[in-house]
Figure 1 (cartoon, rainbow, N blue to C red):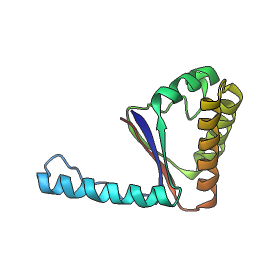
Figure 2 (cartoon, one colour):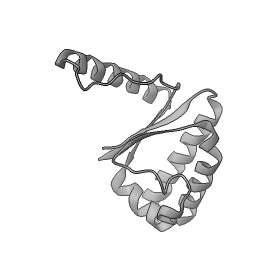
Figure 3 (cartoon, rainbow, N blue to C red):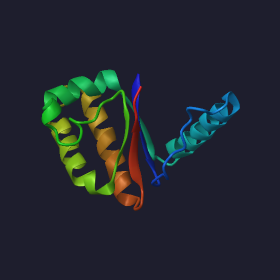
Figure 4 (cartoon, helix red, strand yellow):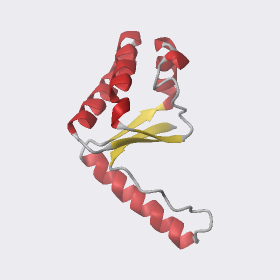
Length: 130
C-alpha cells in the first residue's frame, strides 16, 4: 500500500468515469500509467509506503500538523503552491521526529520532492491513496 505523490499541471475538472465503457476505463488507466512513468523519470513522482509514513506522522504530531495531519492516505486530493511553506514546515517536523534510517530516508525523500516542486512553477501536488 502506498501514497502516490505526483507533481502535475492543474487539471481541468475531470470527466466522471461512472458511465464509462470498459474500453474507456482501460484507455484512461493506460494514459495515467504512461503519465506516471514519465513523471517518475523526471523526478515528479514519489511513492510513499503508508506503513512507513503513518508511524512517522504520529511521532511528529499526527493531526496537529497543518497539512500532513489532514492528509488521508486512502483518499485523493490536490495541494496548491500556496500550501508549500506549511507543507515544508510539516516535513521539517517529520525530519526531527524520525527515529531510524528508514524514517530519515522517507523525510529526506519528501524534502527533496518538495524542493523539486519549488523549482517547477505552475505545478500542483496531487496525491492518490490506496
